[in-house]
Image (cartoon, rainbow, N blue to C red):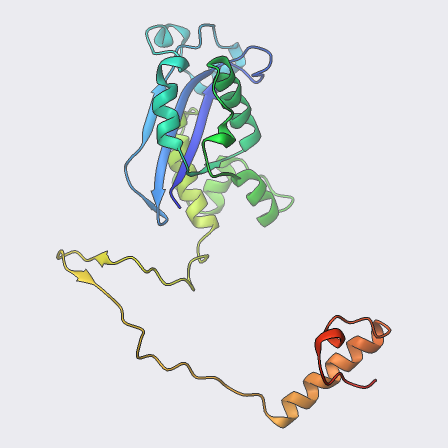
Amino acid sequence: MRQIVLDTETTGLSAEGGDRIIEIGCVELQRRRLTGNNLHFYLNPERDSHEEALKVHGISNEFLKDKPKFAEVVDELIAYLQGAEIIIHNASFDVGFLNKELELCKRNALHHHVATVTDTLAMAKAMFPGKRNSLDALCDRLEVDNSGRTLHGALLDAELLAEVYINMTRGQNALQIDTVDETNAFGAVTRVDFSGLDLIVLQANTDELTAHQDMLAQLDKASNGKTVWRKYDPNPVEV
């Protein structure tokens, strides 16, 4: 599935309180590789940023005055995101703002346009419980170079998050065989033929089978004969 790593910058912290999106950065991944097919907007939010928000992103109100409004880019954004898995750090924040902007444009909420949303903050909390899991902390932990990040920026943060996500999920595809032909550096298509491969099946010996049955008997006894396999095993172990 096509994946889009997305980040936003906003005028403040409350979409329901009237804050708006001022920047959207999107980075495309195909088969866990950056494609370069990115999307980036600065947006006129039709209001000023809060002072604290300015300290975070450094994008001045004056700079945004001649930028397009969200309604002017919404069709392009929806077309770009259509059907993709969207990867966001602290997804509830960005999705809340995107849904509010879509609502103002009388468009359906984000989930109507995309396949799914993956929250890397939730992933990080599960992988690194009790640790700091901000984007900067994850970059340090996973050895992603974030030395150019002095202020928050949607496109830069999306690029960093893409690298963080790839590192967090490294090895997930290790047992998968890609069925799509790959083109090597010389332009030739390489294919791997597995049709002649004989898989070796090792059968359990008598001792192993006996040990297995003993373990099943112990589990069955501990559950007072309520184990599920007794319903389907034509030769259940007598306890």
